[in-house]
Length: 381
Image (tube, rainbow, N blue to C red; front, side, top):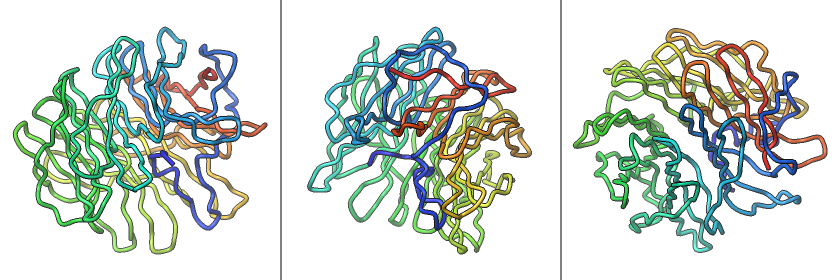
């Protein structure tokens, strides 16, 4: 219900939901955790040197949603962070501008379908809900913080006419930012901020991909993404910028042949262009983190076939500024997906998703990248 990433959609005629995830990596390496694993999914992660915070949701032994959940990695050990009441709420994105301080955004579902965006703030190990302006039904999909007192969250209204939403956090309150006039339906799916005067947000409007840029005083629509006639549905999932002239956006397209294909675009300060991606029968790219214009880690999932006997597998790729290539030895098994990745430096990244264990049940999947190989991190308690 609260699963954010495009990897959660059905890949092809198999109708295999990618959230049912994988068998262990051959290089499994424990990195702490408690003895009793949690059932659930980790949807997003934000890392600083020496610390990561992940968010997602928890399930009971019958795979029923029981509430949002967050975890903290500190000194190589994962621990559960205390959450406020989480009934009917889902966190979709988290951003940590410094150790011990994070902001997460998502939405609350009501029986009336009048969904409301909501936000939480992590400080000194405790999550507390922060008040979001109540101006109609909204989904908040992504957040990016440059300091504890400045963040931008993006999303859309959840009732027609569907329109993009932009919010700003000043450390105390959230407020609306004026959005450019774009014909609905329009949605912003991801945002990446470098400073108080430099942000990029991506999404889509009708059948056209949408990108908006913040210069410190206003948002403007920038040169749109290129499009191919063979693609009928565009869904950006994640965005990472390292400068005002270098961004990498990833996502998926639904083609006229009825398949999902992973796609990536680069921003050079003036326009967006397609970035070449490896060919797969079906794939979606759902997370990206860049430490420089020539060093990005990209995650998602792929399937070697659209037949039911080929469930999706987690996918990890590297972008070197010119080409995208699969990471060697990153086969994580069938029924697996990685939803998000965060790199504190080029040789230290954490990728998260979920895993279906042999005895049944979905559990968080965490992989650590050291610049050359992936290693499984320990089960969560």
